[in-house]
Length: 275
Image (tube, rainbow, N blue to C red; front, side, top):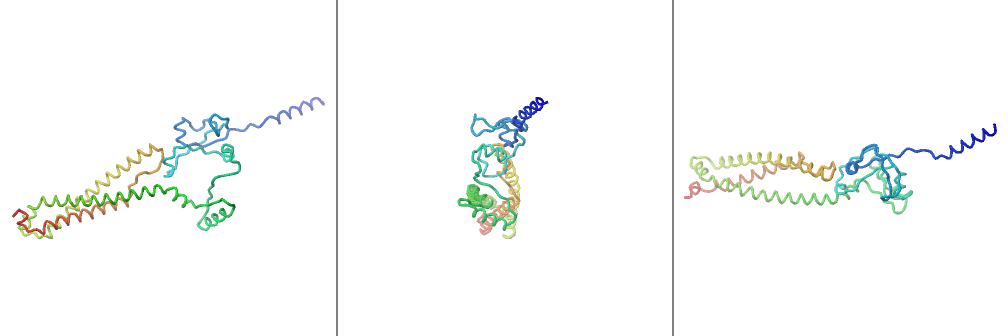
């Protein structure tokens, strides 16, 4: 009987000494990494701090799609989302962090959280998410202003070019205008017809321009989304842009037509025939 009890005790001690079996941890990886490395959900990978070093075996549980963040477009690094304790072991920081995010409700909650974090210890500095977004988008603001300057220069140059084209076109019809003047048609009616024709041309050009801009915008988004593998919208044609383009086209077209017609009707009819 004593031998049986001793054997049971030894068996129980040997069972307790066996380390418990823990299933592999799970991670979520960037879908670009999955495509480049040929990984899929359910695959087993090894995470290590340095290449070739022993690490932890984990299972891919999800694929993370890249967010539409302009600050991440030019970054080619892959992202792997792991559990916090796993991350501490990989980076070797222990109980330290470089930065963390806190969700708040309302402006008052945000202000109180900023003050509490700043006063927690020396070296802490809290920023609202809006300030971080503005700081990280400084480059894109500069590019946006540069594009705006190019747009203004293009509009001014196109207005001058349009005026020259309208002057040439109306000047080619000087004999027709002279005949209408000699027939008794008033200068106001001639100016009105030229301005109406300019408005129709401007509307037709606006429609063609909007169609061309939408096509080019779709091609730009398709191309650069494939290059950078991001859902970010690189080119956008909005209703406001269309309204501004159509309004500018009408104003410039009507102005060019009116100036060209005024220049022509102020001349004597006989001088338009070259006499």
